[in-house]
Image 1 (cartoon, one colour):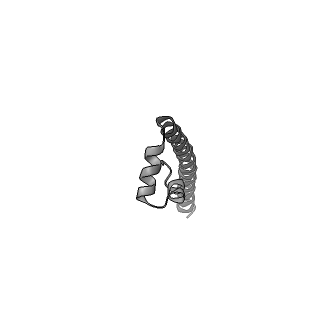
Image 2 (cartoon, helix red, strand yellow; image 1 turned 60 degrees about the vertical axis):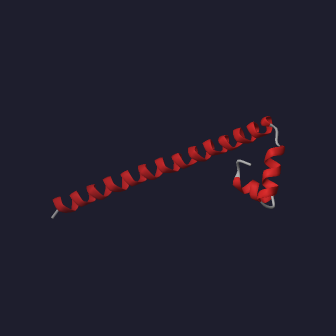
Image 3 (cartoon, one colour; image 1 turned 120 degrees about the horizontal axis):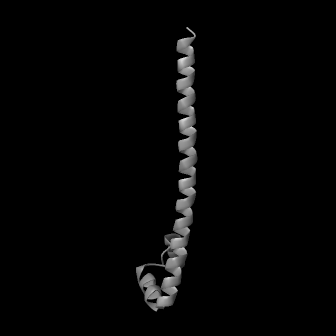
Amino acid sequence: MFNWGDTLASVDGYSNFATTVTAQSIDDVHKSAMAELWTAILQHQRRHKHMRYGIHTFRFALISFVAAAVLVIVTR
């Protein structure tokens, strides 16, 4: 019930969803919540890694641009 894609694929509507949720034990809910939290942590790590790569690439491009601009101005 914590993953919207799996939930929408496995229930027909709200009444089916409500019946399914109330039929689960607290242990089942706890396990589902932990699995979804772990998935969210992994996704966050992946996004953070891509963001760091993008920032490093942007900084390199900016420094290269400034260095090229200075070189062009100095050699005039």
